[in-house]
Length: 87
Image (tube, rainbow, N blue to C red; front, side, top):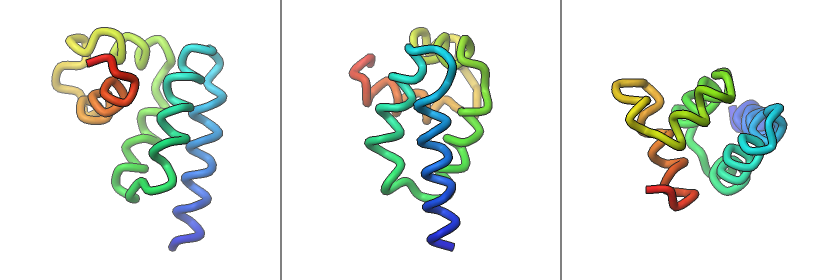
């Protein structure tokens, strides 16, 4: 299980750093570098789901959390905002 979790963390880190836009590479990549090593499986699953969302949508959520409202990603976006001192 640990090897699988480590493999998922590495894949998620790569995906976070290679988004297609430099802004999201930086926002998600720095967060991933800092948080993925100790991220629990349940939190990793949510991060992986977030990585499946389009960059413009994630960027809108990070810059204007009001657009997020009742999304399942609200807590994770709040963590991202806090990590980058946007709150």
